[in-house]
Image (cartoon, rainbow, N blue to C red):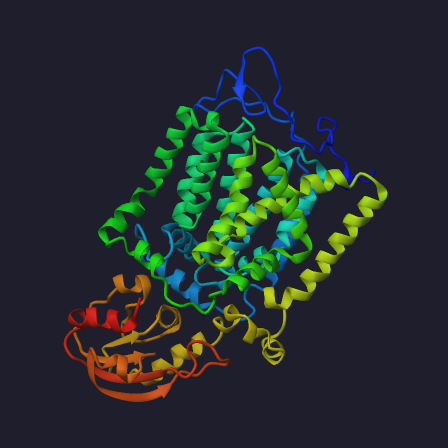
Length: 525
């Protein structure tokens, strides 16, 4: 048998759920018996499938290095993306919360700036590291489920080279950090279900994960519901309370900030504005499957079925099925459900590797993996900026991906505004992309103000009333200034959200502070 599909001697291939062993001191529990003694934090001691196979360190390292090198090779190909400009400025304003993301992203942004200055590659390396952690955790998930060397390598490679992970790790954004934290939470929950985990660790991961991206709450709700339905023994310990307290303590700064700002994040999520990345429900399904890679969807299905069949692991099965369904019904975006689908993919590597014990079956798996590699290569230009910009524009790649559109033209915008801003006291922008670009690339500009998202809380102290408006049409500006004079329009190398918007000069009706409520209203949610 080839080494790739060889399992450790203590893990016998089997297709049915592994029963929990009977023995002295065992009590009642699902599909078997629970040991009377628990962990130090109240975790129930539930016997698992035996000693885990050795971690496939060198193959796993090869996958991580190859994937990370691919991301880093093109990390500065086009430029700073609109959202990255926002997160970069957020790192200059560390606080307990932000309108649509948790404070962990801003902390990482500040760390990137301290370590690398304003280097785009340094900035994005944090996302690449998060991707590497996600890949390692995928292998650990397979190992925890009894998977040997082959299963671990399949799990790591399938997750590492999924369009979802490759594409999201190409940008500094909460999505990458959420993928790593969600995979960590699910891996720790899996260990708890198998009786060798820690509620304390899970509580810490949940608290940090929620500070990274609030969408983790859906995962946690379904996990707790699943444990309450099928594994009450796991919840009936002091460890669960410890986890809740730890997570709550870690969330406290964010909750305090939210309470002091009218629960702005809750309001924003309940009334989200239209987005350039919005999806119909049919697009949601297609994008979720495409981001996973169509070729390995069957592997993720195998993982979900395996989790649902085993009553010990059914809470995780409910989560990997329930999260995509929940976001489908709630109108969420497909990438919100991405992390749990990656977990299902990692789990599915175990039954796939166990099935591939005969030569023809190994050949079939080889064909599957080859097909996936071809698919990744085909979609790569739309996943990472591997093509020169002019080629990507000519072939319609940039037109088809808003992230690419949003990486272009920001330094030129700052230079354009700089040429027009002479004598102005303040520059007011209609969105955070423009504000972030002027903050990072503007030289000698007046103070920059924007009422978009969290920027509204960073209002500069300005006494003068001469303003340059970026992106505001005359009708929207009429509520807070007079003497609107069009100076030019934003020039961008491709058709994006900014191209053609006006740059104008006006006189504020009163001070910036007095007009701020009207500017917020004109800017929108």
